[in-house]
Length: 322
Image 1: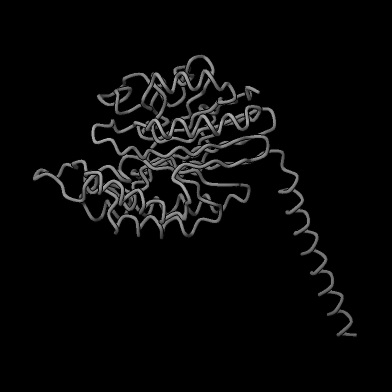
Image 2: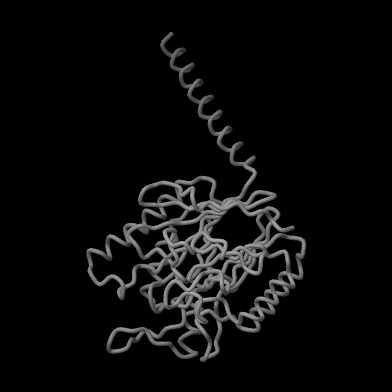
């Protein structure tokens, strides 16, 4: 009798487990959206220029670890887009080792692009501790270091997600006179070729720099030539030629949600392409944005990882263009 009751209990628990597993998998499989979590400028492990106190450094890095844990707890994340400045300063071996270790423990696939800190600067600094630009050999070495760190075939690449085309556009110019936010002619030609292949797919571009004039000049850097995507006129023409592009997702400017530029009508470029700005992660309070890609719209939401709350006042709903 006792064994029979025990078998029934075990059978009941098994049925409950299978039912719960089926319910969870069914809910996920039938979700009508794809979710992309966005990390802006992680600056791993931390900027020694901004934080020279070891206690502060530990606190900031612990906050970055919490961001990773939060995102891992969200079971509907299809991928994590990282919009440049993965490393804090110059792209040293130690910085890339820290970045590889940090991203290795994410549950969702990581889709990164380069920023200026990932390859532009030399490992040596001025006597006052300022970063200086590296030469062509240094930049090439660090771009290769980035590619290897994330197991990429190419620094720029595409991915299809449901009805959408995602384009991950890395900075990689080898011109010694280039601006911090400048794409090469070869890259823009590559981008045109990708867009020509799939003209009917609504397209999102993930880039380190934002588009010009999608921020007001609220500080000395915002909306200056090294802080928006260059060459501006060529990019403007490209966006006009390929109307399937309706979202441009960027970092670089460190614009936080408590700045009016974070969620503004100024974020609309040329009356058609929304620029989704993302702040950096070198802070004690970190916010990340998530894109919910529905068949007919994209919902942009912002999460405060310190308070564990969504910021409803900066939510945006964008109807897809095509």
